[in-house]
Structures are given as C-alpha cells and as structure tokens.
Image (cartoon, rainbow, N blue to C red; front, side, top):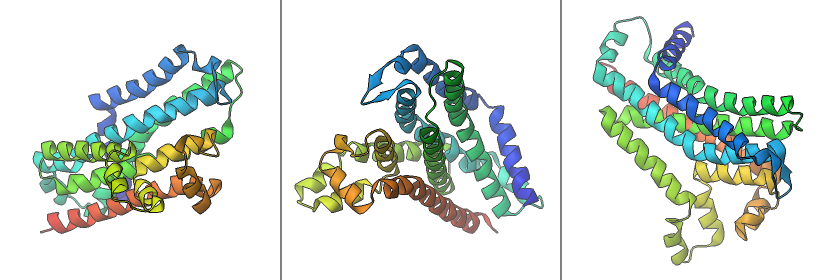
Length: 275
C-alpha cells in the first residue's frame, strides 16, 4: 500500500507540472466561464432555470470532452514509460508491478477528475455568491456521474496503453475508440441493425452497452424524467429499469466497465513485462 500511494503521488506530481494538465484545466474552467457569460443562468428551458440549466449544459459538454482527454493522456502513460525505458529502472526498485500499475491508475484518476469537479463546484460557489438556488441533489448526482465516466475511460485507456507498443499507436487507438463510441452515440452504426429487423429491445440494449450513451441518457433523465426526447425508446428503458434503477445503472455500469478493463490491462501488463 505504501508503494502504491508513492506511485500515485509521483504520477500526480508529474502530471501537475505538465502542459497538458494546464490546458486541460483551462478548458473546463473556460467552459464554465463561457456558460456564465452566455447568460444561461438567466434562461428557462423545460422548467430548468438558473444553475440547474448551467449544470445540465456543462454535463453535456463534459461528456464530449472528458473521455477524449482521459483516453489521450492515459494511453501514453504505460506506452510512454515503455518507450522511455522507465520499466527497467522501475523493476530495479522494490516496487511491485501491482503497486506501480494501480498507483499510476489512482494518480491519473485524481488528476483527470480534479479540474472537472473543481470547475463544477466553482460554478456552485459563484451561484451561492449571487444568491442563486443550488440544486444539491443534482450536484451530487452529477458528481457521481463524472466520477463514473472518468473511471470508465481511465480503465479503457490503461487497457489500450498496455496493448500498444508505442505512444503514437496508443494515441491512434484511443482516438478510434472514442470515435467509435460517438458513432454509436448518434445511432449511425445502429442504423444497420435496424435495417436487419432486430427487436427494439435488442437495439436499445446494444446502445446502452456504450458508456457514453448511458451517461448521456442518465443526464437527460435528471431534467426529463419521462425521457420524452428519446421517443419510444424511453418505454423500453423505464419499463426495464425505472427512474431510480436507471440512475443507479448510469453510475455503476461505467464503474464496473472501467474496473474490468483496468484489471484486464493489469493482467496483460504483468504477463508481458515480467521476466
């Protein structure tokens, strides 16, 4: 445990000094500032006003930005260390592969999650100063959603990183994964399944295997409990999950998926790098 925490702290320290972390922080901070400037807190859409409307928009934007940032930065960790020859140095120290891998995972999670949640709570603090009503229930759920989404793509990123033999290959693979999930998000690829005449429940089940789709639908459920925007698909989702059940699925499924990919990545890492 001591070596695991030291590895995590070392990865955090290294990331905080890097340029990508500064850009990453500025992006999410800039998004919140831009949303305030745009006057969203003064608008009313579908009954959502003030900070609620801003948080809904922030969550939707984060869904597009966060996975790509997490994948691109994470996949270069193991692959980059392999190219730099750090493995040889690491294996000469009394640090187990498990401590190094999981410590790096935890450190990277802290780094990728911190700017996102700080930007959101910065918006909450500003709303409190301005006397805006704070939807604490939504803030709590949004925080859990972001933890789940970040962990999911962090696990996928570590898995890709253990497979790739160079940083360039790892980055390309990460971009392809992100693009593939976006295509399923917009149901472009699912159109072929519809033409094959598959049952609606099967098609929706395939769509909900996509963590981005799960995250997006869960965010919609918070301001549209009947999921009117999804049309007939809402009946399949709500009949099988229910509102609270689907919110739980939105949080638990990406966490489980990320943990599974991280575990598979560790198994491959240990098998491939032990003498």
